[in-house]
Image (cartoon, rainbow, N blue to C red; front, side, top):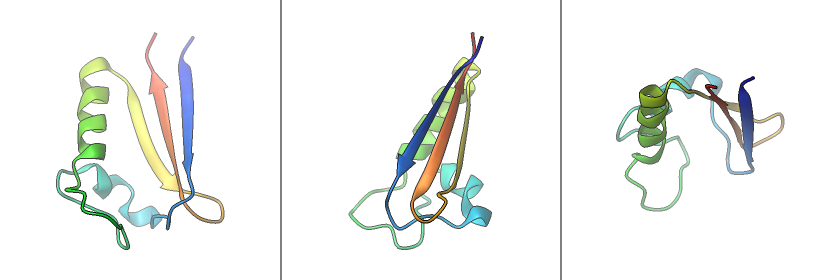
Length: 73
């Protein structure tokens, strides 16, 4: 059995064509507030790669974003 987790965010949202790019170091989404360095999702992606997990990011239905994590057995 695989464990699946979905995280919903209600921020400004993301563009579907940019979703994969946001996992690169130093990349921040358009309209991102704050003083982040664009490292958070890159770290998550690296951990997922190390453990054989899968992470994806997609726009929310009306706003925000949805991150999906699939954990290996």
